[in-house]
Image (cartoon, rainbow, N blue to C red; front, side, top):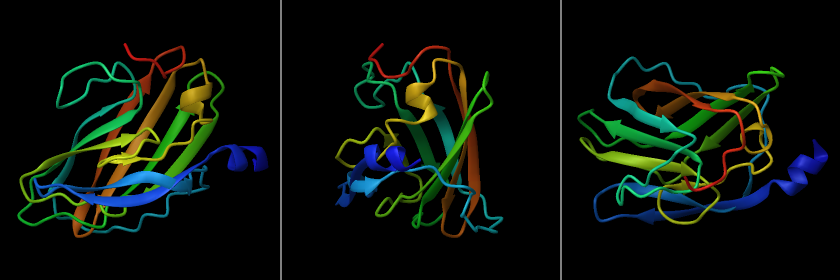
Length: 176
């Protein structure tokens, strides 16, 4: 695990506010390492935040509709009556053959979503609005087996949104 921690140092968070009212943190210099358990504490029953899609392969840029490098890409809709803030994410990935599991948690500092808006979360280690760090040595990047993702997205005052995604056999790091 020490080697993983040292190799996985990626970047911190830089906040960018977009004219559309969607704000997003960007990757810059924080390590992304597995966590033992889900630290999210959210007991809200108020619906409003939903994950409309979660992709980990055959990704398409939501704006240009062109193929992009594979990554965890999540589309988030705010159907609530107020802006959603205080986002945090917990996701686990499980290798279907070895049953190895990794869990990841990230506060999505700076990411906000106006009522009625849709935003995108890209876990690709790049900078820019809506881009967040990833562990490039994770099961997703290293396993050649099918890898299943279970995702929980939390925003202050709203019920947790959940989704799943599956990476097929092979590795997931090329533009399709």
